[in-house]
Amino acid sequence: MDTALFYSLVSVIGVSLVSLIGVFTLALNQKRLKQGLLYLVGFAAGALFGDALIHLLPEATEKFGFTLEVSLAVIAGILVMFIVEKIIHWRHCHYLHEEEQGQPHKHPFAMTNLVGDMVHNFIDGLVIGAAYLVSVPVGIATTLAVVFHEIPQEIGDFGVLLHGGFSVREALVINLLTALTAILGAVAVFALGNFADGLSFWLVPFAAGNFLYIAGSDLIPELHKEVDSRVSFFQLVSVLLGIGVMVLLLGLE
Image (cartoon, rainbow, N blue to C red; front, side):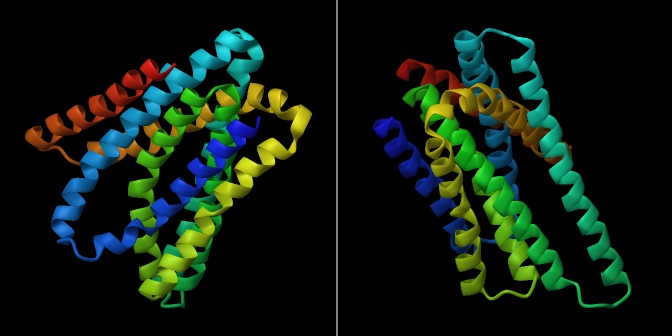
């Protein structure tokens, strides 16, 4: 338990520091940044699919069996992310309406984005902590999948905060603070003590559902916005690379 907690804390702190990546984007040409992000999004999608189907679900079914409860936990993970995203889109529609009316809209929208980001990061912490309860290799694979997903997301969040009226320093600090909620999520897993095994029973397949939803609903559609055949080919390569990393991590087990 102590080893798992140590690895979990190191991992969530590392994931939280990814939020500072926004500072590096300021020195990049925006066109190149946008082009590079497409491949990073593809890599993230592959890593999330790979972690869900190669690590999380096999571990959950090996330990607990492919039961109805495991299936329901996967479905719950998908539906919870659907609800969270619906709320964010609903708030985003209000933002667009305010923009059309010429009313102040930047800060409310940015704050809504921050709330959604805090919830998402807290869940990331729960997921990483639960993965380390299964085994260290599964925890490492899950952490890497989260990192690959967080890089493009944090760059996007940084841009939203700047657009929302925050200064560069404010955006970096606030983005980091919201990312640190992942630590609370990881600590919460271990604070439950004897309930930890029961929690991992639900959280591991729940996380798989989260990852499948994010990769399939958010990331893959982003890749389809680019129709150039050459770019599309390298997007496919980036997805396969993400999956390949998850396959290689099986060697740690």
